[in-house]
Length: 420
Image 1 (tube, rainbow, N blue to C red):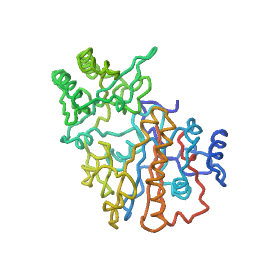
Image 2 (tube, rainbow, N blue to C red):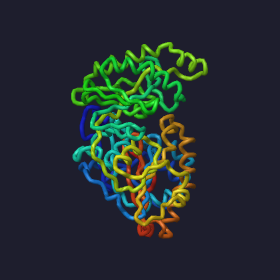
Image 3 (tube, rainbow, N blue to C red):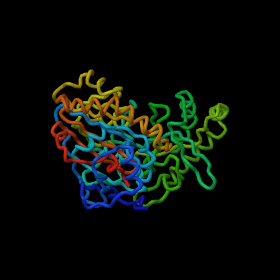
Image 4 (cartoon, rainbow, N blue to C red):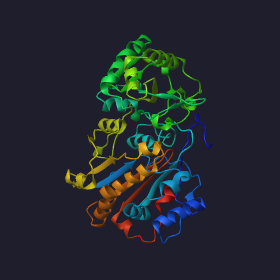
């Protein structure tokens, strides 16, 4: 346990350094046996540096940046995750890249690394808190869903299933609920009057994602659903950020909704189909919208928070393309273009610890993105490729240019990026 949930400045940016602690010997052997690298296995950086409040400029011409949530397993899972991983193009990109930022998080951070990265990149958190546990993304999610956040403070609230374990409660991944829009609207219709009776403002342009605003919530801090999924929810429940106390206002609202949904026909029908009941709501991402800006001219993502930040920054948005070639064919040759693409095939297998599916996702990205991007760099058709690879607590950001590919003495291995 390396951090306190109530602490500030929980992340540390760690420089590339030779003053490091070696990783486990079994991990070295596992990686060497699958990758046959002629280079020695590098240690994972352990020296804690000063918090970095600035990020490298993202306004290079014809620049592509890939944001990859849950692309880095913890070192403890690495030998299993790497068992059949075959990523020669990514290996070369990582080996020759320039390290821009390495953020080591803490065990009890309530937000996820990719959430903090987009919040920092667009300026959605105040200067000076760039490495803290901050990702106030709800107002931007509301904007992406078609609402108007104005200057109010909003929290995102999602219908969820909380499972009863032996002696605790466990949150399951909301994406696994298979909740239809019709069922979500029905449940929302039951919950809305209960919420409004408590003096809480609610907006729900997307039926399975609601936005609540109330002075009673104060500085309430909630945890990202994927941060808490599969875990005892006790430490992840909303609390006052400065005192650590539970919010009576939130607990009352949550209890009212839970009772109204108990044995509701929607849940009875779901259980008859073998689906989990929607039996609770989850609070997260509270904050007020700030003036944001972007060095990206285009942002291609399915994530509401990322799309909302781009909209607020006046960047063009769209869904992520299927491949690097599809991106290039769709207007990516503008010499002044800087594009952020968020690709998220890893979240579900990572949360479920399904490393076979995680490997399959990497194989697809290797074929459709890493190999063609490497070829484009070598041919001078892409000025710079950026990679932000995230884990459960930390992230690593790299950049690669054509010139970097000639720096044969660089020998960083993919496994050296893993977050302890």
